[in-house]
Image (cartoon, rainbow, N blue to C red; front, side):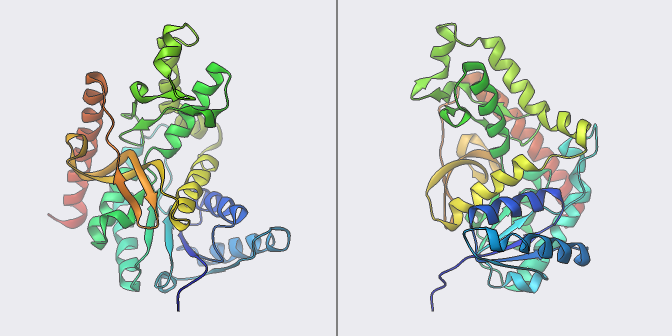
Length: 319
């Protein structure tokens, strides 16, 4: 019998995971949620806490603490587990610790018989998404990284403030690493169909403004971490948006982590690129016509990611 409702398993009930979950239940994404965490007692506490919202939300659901066995019939797994980024630490400095954690998670999920779509936000996101896909051998399309969805959301907000328009009216995106080497693709940016660079020509925003927006975007996580220790609300909402597109078979375009196989002249790892998202995960990658400067910056970002992936791949897989 065909399922008529969705089941989400969340692996990792820290601040990011619970921000995703809270956004998901408020959007009514699933009928069933299962929380998996090394700290089973905390996961159970979160489940009880979130269940207190059921009576006042429009979409009913069930929620419980569970184990990897609960992944077997899940439609979607969201992974946010891993140690957090410390003040002053880059995402890539998290690499070896969280890669070993991710490999263990991947093996446990594969053993359950899971056949749905996995969405990954654990940092460093691009490398860990690649590790997960390699460890599981799952269909590459069914493994989706958070990519630069959050980075792009930050950029759109900052540009919107400069132009005094709503952020969701700004089509400007970040691609490459979810981190310091990311690339703002201004050549493809627009507001209501009008190229963003035309606004520069008209003096409504300057090249210096655009540089400032990109700089603030890549530094945003550090600013938040220095003030409160971690970032989670933004990524939680972005993960819910990606999950909604998958569960709803929406065929929308988002800046997710997808596996490059020659697109943009790169291959062998996941990174943030524009892609069509539906029930298959990321369905296909969209290739923009980048400027020479953007190509150079994207290649540099990819080279750094690939170097780090190859290094940790040897440490984690032994080859």
